[in-house]
Image (cartoon, rainbow, N blue to C red; front, side, top):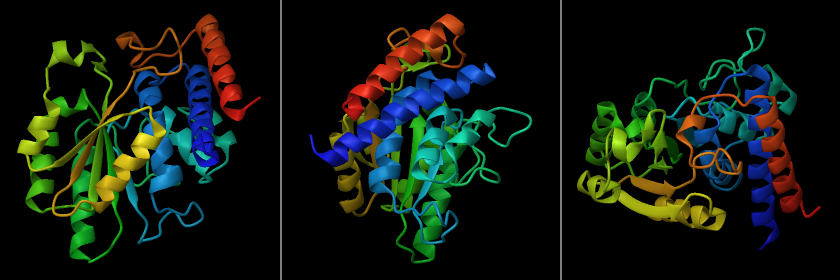
Length: 280
């Protein structure tokens, strides 16, 4: 494994640890879908996207919209490690004294390009950003991350249709396909497979990838960047609660905080994983 890939693994491992601490200390938050998405966000912010934490409003920057807006225990730790704000600010997560609300917030959190939380709306905003880029003849790219439970929203598919109609090849969306949502398995709540065939029928270029394979994610984003004439959808197969043994593939960990015993066990596992990645 090259040093760059090792560095990305360290960022993702530390992100999960920071996210755990955030949710535990405020006794509220969404760990399951945040942990499944952590590797995706790591690759985006540390390898793919053209951004500058010192100039977060640069009009020529790439944009990212967290359509599944409750997964800030993934987004905020990645933004902190990328240098948008000190990691110490994560301690104010969901605090009335702070500005880090439980859903992505663009006015007070540096690096957040769109406030989200009402499921289905984020991808529509991303489509608008990409269309604006085309109209303004800008070369920035727009990325968005959706949950596979979120895509049960009808607005999502309206956005998919619009993106294909306007041939938004500057748009790359990712669906975090962890198979679970707050009420259980997506296959039971509202089946959406086969996603690849449905999205292709909607006019999207589709790439399927292991959402925890950093090198494969890098390759997928490169293929998306090179593809012309249509938007790209990356279907990232992931594990909800990735990294914590008792959280993995458990729908019950969609949106709750661990108790003291659970926190200590989870933290022990994540600290060990981080030490391994760091070569300690």
